[in-house]
Amino acid sequence: MTRSAHAEEIMDDPADDESKDNEKFLTFILSGDRYGIPLLDTKEIIEYQDLTTVPMVPIYIAGVINLRGSVVPVVNLAERFQLPQSTITKKTSVVIVEINDEDSCVDIGIMVDMVNEVIDLKNDQIAPPPSFGTSIRADFIKNMGKSENSDGFLIILDASKVLSLDELSALEEIKHSHNVSQ
Image (cartoon, rainbow, N blue to C red):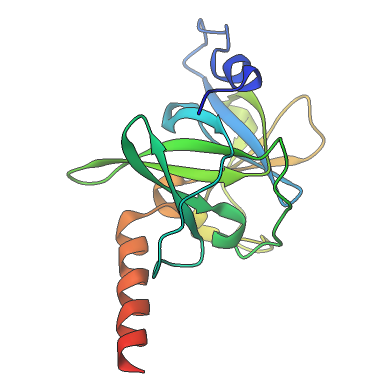
């Protein structure tokens, strides 16, 4: 389980003298759309590998990986967003994201079609999310970003809501109680 050369290049961006008016985002492709998460939420990027499946978990939990002795759940983001599934290729990656809960910090992997790049966005390039017309739940979207180098918008995700520990646990409890009552 090693970081790819592409991942090293993306994560070790040399622009460390950034202004306070800029924010860095790790961008990735998922079902043909461009998404981003704040770089500060990202721990590392690893190449996709076979996952160990876990029974009786929500369908969007693809499995778990062993990351230096720690069990890390991996969320299939396309499944979580109810988007069409992509074929797993050599570019498929797992982005390890650190989620801070009230009293804990948990690493969760998100499976993406391809990691794209790290971009800097100025405050005036970041806008509130639309209240309609998105293919994913509106509360999953933190902001929209407009890069100078791109024609389209970047959907900036709110990782704490997409990977909400409370919601993931609650969904599992509902599913488990529903299965027991049948």
